[in-house]
Image (cartoon, rainbow, N blue to C red; front, side):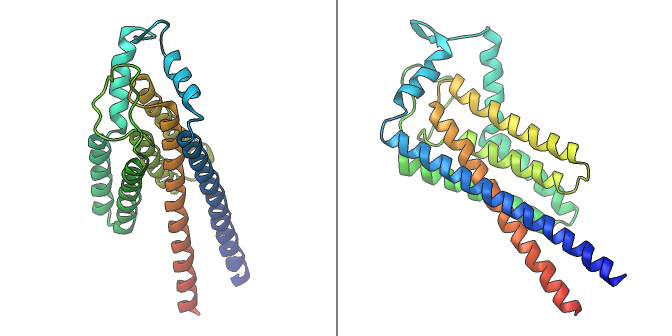
Length: 240
C-alpha cells in the first residue's frame, strides 16, 4: 500500500515538474518574442509593417474613417475598456475579496503580486522605450502614457490568463481547462486588436504587450509551482 502511495505521489510530482518545464518554455519563447519586437522597433524595421496594418483598417485615401459599420467603433471602445485599469482593478478586487472570504489568502496574495508586478513592469518599459503614440489618425480613446508596449494588451493578457489558469488548476476535465485558457487568450486578442482599431497603438505595441503579458504570467506560475514543490518536499521531510 505504501508503495502505491509513493508511486501516486511521484506521478503527481512528475506532472508538476512537466508543467514547470512547459511554463519555462513559454517564458523563454515570450521573452524572445518581446526582445525581437523591441529590437526591430528601435531600429525602425517595423515602420512599414506598422503603417501597413494600421492603414488597412482605414478607408483608402481617408485614414480618418474606419472600415466597417458604425456600431463596430462603439463595440471596440467597449471591448477595449475590458483591458483598462478601472475594469481590471475592479475585477481583481472582487476576485481577491472572494479568495479572502474563502480563506485562500495565499492565492489572493499571488493574484495581487502577479498582476501588480506585471503592471509595474509594463509602466517601467513604457518609460524606458518612450515610443510616441500613432499620429496618422485621431485617437478614438483617451491616452496618458507612451505607446510601447501596449498596457492594455499586457495587463489583459496577464490578468485573464492568470485567472483562467487558477480556475483550471481545480478543474479535472481537460476540455474545460482548454476552454478556460482559450477564452482568456481570445479576450486578450480582441482587446489588443481594439487598441489598433481605435488608433491608439501601433500593431507592434500590441504584439509586444501580448508577449510581455504571457511571459509574466508564465513566470508567476513558475514561481508558484516551485514554491508548491518545495512546500510538499518540506512536508514530506517533516513526516519522515
